[in-house]
Length: 351
Image: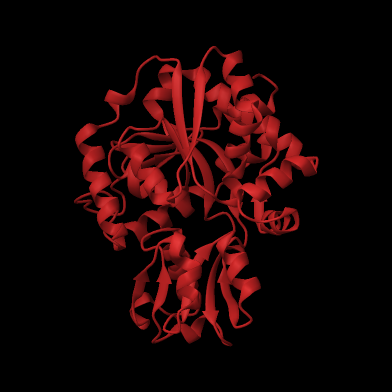
């Protein structure tokens, strides 16, 4: 079960601790998984753009695709990678909640419709009452479901439970007669909606803008000891963002094919994504006045589900720091940091 996986990783991370991972070095590894906003990491590896920027700073950066999203975060948490593509919620629950001090180096986008609650048949989200819902348990899908239910005065207790379903099995699960609703993310959302006439999007992330952030997070100690690592990642990322913003169809087609769709399909997914092509926009998101409130709400959700760290006494267990030094949660236990330094360097042309 996913919950067991998360808790096992949390316990392991607590035992290992972040300091052992921090040291000066020249070889780095980051992990990523298939998702519209993270496809650029695969392209950076395949195109040689990452190698170019790494060479500029005298380092090497190995970009590794992991097919299971949660497993990629577990491996980062266990110290097998220096960074990983992850959402704000999953960063807080798994590495930060497990004691691994983690920094959001790049805010790539926020989901603006890419995550959706899909009902089989006509109705609204209120029609989930008494039905089972298939999703990746304790993931952003679970959070989206909770936010959707809350929007109509309902709670998870009004359902006939949630059924933990791997993202790799979601399309097959939807086809099963007993499945009545699913919550998932793109490209799975697009495939389910386009392939099933009875699929009905009843709530999606465009209704909670800015709450599901897609990040590249890195070990804070590793970044502090190796600032060139941060510079190389940011430099490569924003070079590619420039190509995407310009609509380079060769680049977009390569990412589309790597994600299992075509150019038009990938463009449709991008349309449901608020991409921060301009680093200044990413800085603005990091400094947004409502980000602390969003993270406090996420912490409440995680605490309610029992996954905000082992034995967390309250939703304030983990401290989250923002640019300027503001902290939500426990300021004596800051393990998640939104740092705009490298995004600002990109905005200033200082990389």
